[in-house]
Structure formats: C-alpha cells, structure tokens
Amino acid sequence: MTSEERDGLRRIRRWRLWAWIFLLSYVPMVWIVKRTTHSDLAVAPFILVWVVGFVRCIARLAFSPCPRCGRFFYSLSGTPSFFNVLAHQCTHCGLPLNADRVIYPSMEG
Ligand SMILES: [Zn+2]
Image 1 (cartoon, protein in one colour):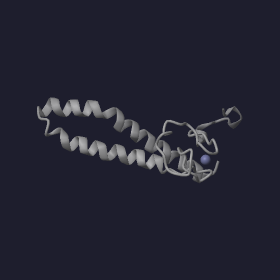
Image 2 (cartoon, rainbow, N blue to C red):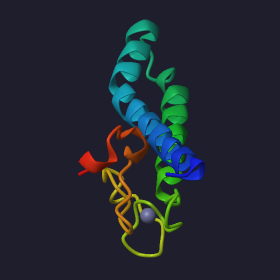
Image 3 (cartoon, rainbow, N blue to C red):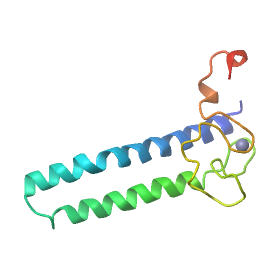
C-alpha cells in the first residue's frame, strides 16, 4: 500500500463520514431550529446550507477516483455515479475502503 493509496482512501472515507453527518443531522437540525425560533422562515437558510453540503459530499464521492486503479471508486461504468456510494470497496479493482487499516494483510477478506 503506497502513501497515495492511503491518502486517497482516507479522503474517500472523510467525504463518506461528512455525507452521513449531513444525512443524519437533517431532522434534528430542523427540529431544533423550529423549536427555538418558532418560525418556518428561519429554517430556510439551514435547509439551504444542508442541501448544498449534502450535494457537495455526494458529488465528491461520485467523482472520487480509486487510489489504486484511477477509475471512479463508486461507478460501475466510466461515468461518475452515486448509486453505489454504500459500497465498501472499489467497484473496479476491489480495493477495500479500509485496506490501510488492516493490520494483518493475510487476514484481509
Ligand atoms: Zn480501483
């Protein structure tokens, strides 16, 4: 495993984490803002920020190149796709997302 592969996997994992944070924070965020402001209009800027952040995370994931083979990590074809963003390995070469965290490579799946 080269340092470029390790950095690439780390970058993909970071964008995945942010996508999950955005996804899971929507309902609590809207609830808290509505509860504290008692206004539907006050929620609009938060929803706008949420949508922009979430779309950015998903777009970064869809356009993420695999650090080993260079093709799109989550795309089955040559075009970027977000349909497989839950995959835990490269859809082309099978590089696991946590390959740099495996302590004993012989035990790797
Ligand atoms: Zn690959």
